[in-house]
Image 1: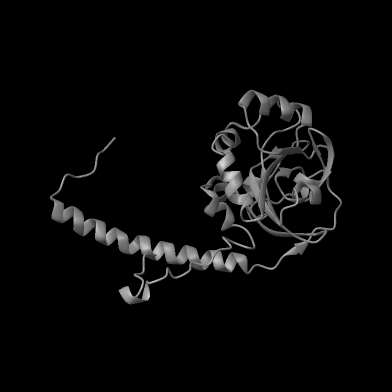
Image 2 (image 1 turned 60 degrees about the vertical axis):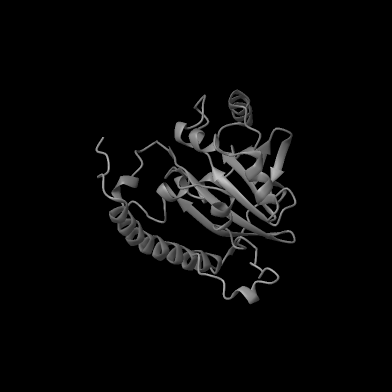
Length: 241
């Protein structure tokens, strides 16, 4: 492994300031992108998807757990497998009760859905010591309709908004099917459910803290920064972005 160059404090300062300029550009570009994401139109979900939890059947609406927004992590777990995907497992290992609490404070619920039967899911979750909600979509079209199970015998193949004619690597062998990762966001308005956003491939792997997750949703972070009392007498607030 090649280590960074050793320089004087002055040289390091100059290089760091130059990098800071680029970091600020990225931060502002990300803020603009997040605003555009919140402005995406949404599609009403009219299919009566039935998922299975440890206590029995659950509708997509019930999976919201009473919260306004639902985020679904599409965890790769084929019905024929005995264990979940290693990459999805590594990501799920980083979820915590604190993350769930922070999302719940913003009326947002995070669950996982896999195509494996609930018995296999519960066995694997017990082995890993996970506590987050995890449902089975076995027997439903949920995974196929949200393009994380690719099987041309069930639904036209599409992944990350590309089809095999655009990306030949998506050509699934005859008689085969693929499980792939993703994350989908939904918004509830009363009893009506809307699909607001999905991300796949490398985007679905770039997870972070609660702010990252909230930035993917239609309602965003749901917070307005208020001017602290007495701030005005100390002058304008610096631009920390």
